[in-house]
Length: 633
Image (cartoon, rainbow, N blue to C red; front, side, top):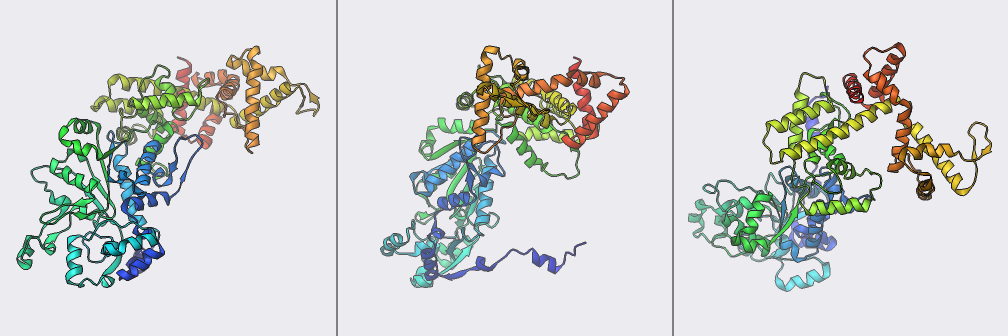
């Protein structure tokens, strides 16, 4: 057992070294000349931090996926891309940096998480060499040292280094430079600073509360009354505490929680900070602040804000980014896993396969808009990247774009409600395992007991679609378990079809797998799959050509075509393989008294469910019982 002593503690001390760098302003000028990015403004620093983690553009996605966000946020890539584009434009000095980035969405969509990720990222980035941040040592708001340069020197310095210098010294720094350093700029001390939310360095946070007790000083600092007699004047900067949230956020990010619930006085100060990039306090003139302002609110508050003429000036200073709920089942499952840390086996109650998928389908089903073209059930399948016969990808994109413009994703059940139901199911002592049927029961009880803004009809439609999709999945699970080496059998059947289809099209022969002789392609082999899809003899040639062309295209890219890559062929192969065992499945899952042969078959199926498919003894038996019920009703 490890000893938690001084040696152990020393191993976990944070590294220091260059973190403790201190030098003169002259030393800092040399650092900027060697690496101009150390003097980046706040938006540019945030953008550089995001891009330092890399990005990728998957083939099936319309926007890039940024690694900085992708480990924590799932299914809202378009929203994330809008946010990154905002910082990219602001980093280039465009006027958009004078906008308040306002995220609007329902509770649980990820608005706070997005901001938290950026804040945490800034803290970690400031501890790297590429993210090093330097400030005037004695400045209460970690001011950029280049503000020390007089106007006469700035143009030459900017031309030679490419850096942008904006702003002048804050009142406290100006007084200190004039009186303690007698204007000797080269002697002014500079140090490296680490961004820290807890220490209020580079990150400011404000949340509106009771207007009777909340004071504007929380944003801009306040007069230190105890020092006025010492310094003789309220206009002496030494008598002022530059400790407001705006001051703390300088050089970093200012988070305004539930911004539109704040009193007008607070929002007016925010307007000056956003547009002029300055802070106004007490008896001092405006002084500069360099910070990205990120706020969030809900839809109702935003609608009231837009309709209020008193806030017209602020309307033009807000960049609205809508943050919808995720609408992809696979990504929703990842959200649940992250929220409950279900990606690792921690010894808690077993969660059966398809349980989280059932929860995700229900949650997303409540967020989907009704469409004349697709049902909720079909949308759950299509939005998750799966294909349906005769539905083209561009049609799906068109429907999705139209639905999003109509507000799809801004209604429905929050992931938090689903996690509440899952927690309830996990806490139940009546069953040793959380199964899909137990999850559906917990979901139904949850929305019957809790008041939600979702219409009861929408809840019932989502529950119906989820039931139907799970019933299909449950049957497929059992059928797969009954088919020996299902994947190998499916791929063999597919490869055999392609071989005979190509030979028929090219008027060539195929090799008999037993005798090795060259024989004519077998028309029955082809028709056995095609008829199960309702493909007529007249349409068979075109269908075969489509399959062969797709396989050839994959081969030219050095890839092999999987049996389930084409929705029509996948459906045909499954029908073919499952048809061979359909009666066996029905008999062995619905018969109460089994003979020895049937018992052995069920035992083997349960073994496969447990050892190969992730079930435990309890949920494997429940799945068998449930499918037996479905097949006899």
